[in-house]
Image 1 (cartoon, rainbow, N blue to C red):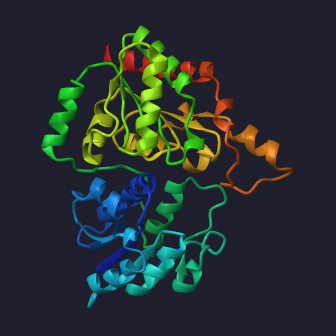
Image 2: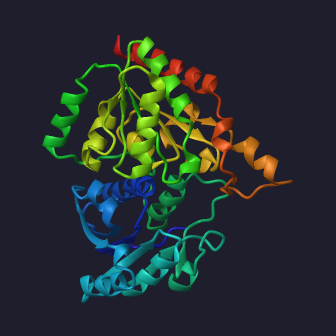
Length: 350
């Protein structure tokens, strides 16, 4: 049921993290903007995530820096002093977000439905979105747009990138270059595929006439994984891990022909740019967290993993546990998806 909000002038969105989730949230924000172009939108967002979205049109950002610890809440209160909103979209189920929401003055406070409003979220909201049985995260977010009367909920993205970053990416990957970008690292090592298997896909792609570029952030885990892939491959790969800003990486993903990634932010960044993604899933249900426009290209062993750990019906979105689940993803299955996408790319470009 959507609220009657004919005189809505200001909206506050609370979604702090993570990269993939804020990419989903952009589609929702822009659906709202299409229906309510005059609406003033303030987005409370994490420090890293802001670096990706800071050029978004028609959105004022307030940064919540969790590295400040308890001081981050006082800073947020100061930053929002004197601001009152018609509506709060409380879109993060986390205790820190529940506490942060206490600094936000809003008449209508919309949260998730009771089944999803964990970590005390239901205590700080006065309306909820419609319950959904098996939602993708993006569809769950679109429920917030629907709750304020938005009728066109088909996702699309327009994330502005500085011209210099677009030129950087086009220099790296000129238009028309057949390029596989591998963003190999997830936030947790157990969600990473094996370096020798990434290397084998890279070799296969090179044999098919593709360039292969490794991309990712500057964390030690990512740098070491990229190095291991290079060593296992034995052929020259272009290693850009840790060498791009988030907006540069977004521009690179736009120029790519195909992206290969586990359950990680760059997979969803690639979706926003219209680039096909081969997602590798073992721990989480790709129906819930997979690359939204490339779900048919996902290579998943999640069903097998979760059934081996649970009897009977499994809650939607329940994670499978284990350090070596990604080993269950076979090289042949990934190469098969690569070949499907490379033939589609060839047909599209010829």
